[in-house]
Image 1 (cartoon, rainbow, N blue to C red):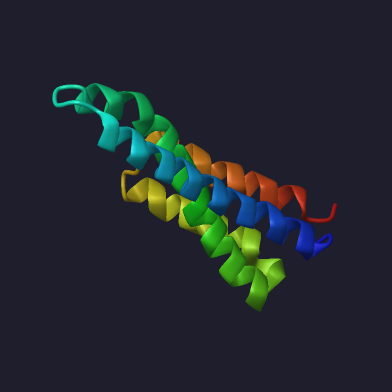
Image 2: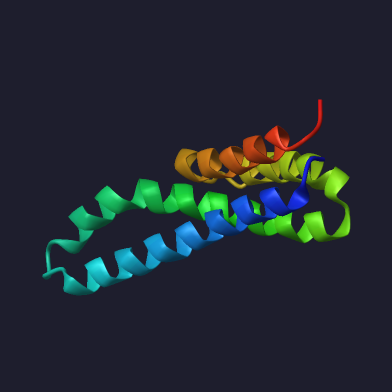
Length: 109
């Protein structure tokens, strides 16, 4: 694996992005009038699910990066299959897969 500190930074940024988006969505929901919440949810849910998928994958990757950096890609690939089996939304799975792709880019060869 190339410099793991670069990958660690990327993974932490994915987690931070989710937290920032979640905070902004929470604020937006609090400001919505009755009757507008369901429409707002329809708009933000796909992005929220995508960023959540990234954050979950990043957390798994960071955990394994500290223990065995060579296994991160394989662990994420297996976890992605489990997430598919759990019938996660396609947006969530796309976010998860994006982190897996990012990890694979850091692999040598």
